Amino acid sequence: MFRQAVRQVAKQSSSVVRRSYATESSSTASDALKLSLALPHQTLYSEAEVQQVNLPSVNGDLGILANHIPIVEQLRPGLLEIISKGGETDQYFVSGGIATVQPGNKLTISAIEAFKPDQFDAQAVKNLIADAQKRAASSDEVVVAEANIELEVLEALQGVAK
Figure 1 (cartoon, one colour):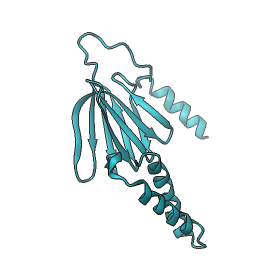
Figure 2: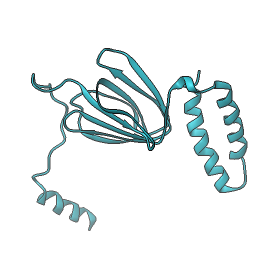
Figure 3: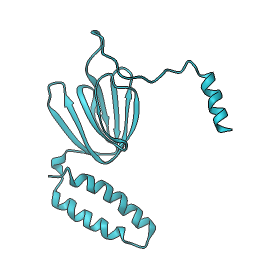
Figure 4: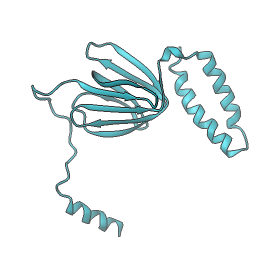
C-alpha cells in the first residue's frame, strides 16, 4: 500500500528538480562559498565568502566547496574547519547542529555552541571523561543516557584539546 502511494506521488510530481552533481561554475558565478555560522547567542559569520568548509557530520566528515549540491546534514561533535579565500584556516569545536547547503553557494550552519580549540584544557577534558565513565556504569537509565551523551562530546573534544 505504501509503495503504491509513493509511486503515485512520484508519477504526479514529474516536475520535481532532479538531484545532480555540481557543475563547473560559469565565469559570472562566484567561486566562493557564502558562509553563515550562527549560535543561539551570536553570529560568527554572516554571508562571509570562504573557499571551503570541512564539517563533522553524522554521515562522516564533509568538505563543502562552491557549487556543492544542496544538502542538509546533522553535525556531530567535532572540528569545524573554515578555509578562507586567502588560505587561512579558522577552526571551531562544535558539539552539534545543522548544516544546510543551498543553491547560490550558500552554506548555513546553526550550531549549539562553537569554541576555538585552544580554549580547552586537555587535562580537564580527561578528568571530565573519567567522571562521565563512572556515571555511565550507573544502574539509573537516565544517568547512563546523559553520561553517554557527555562521553560522545568529550571524546571528540579530547582529540581537539591542546
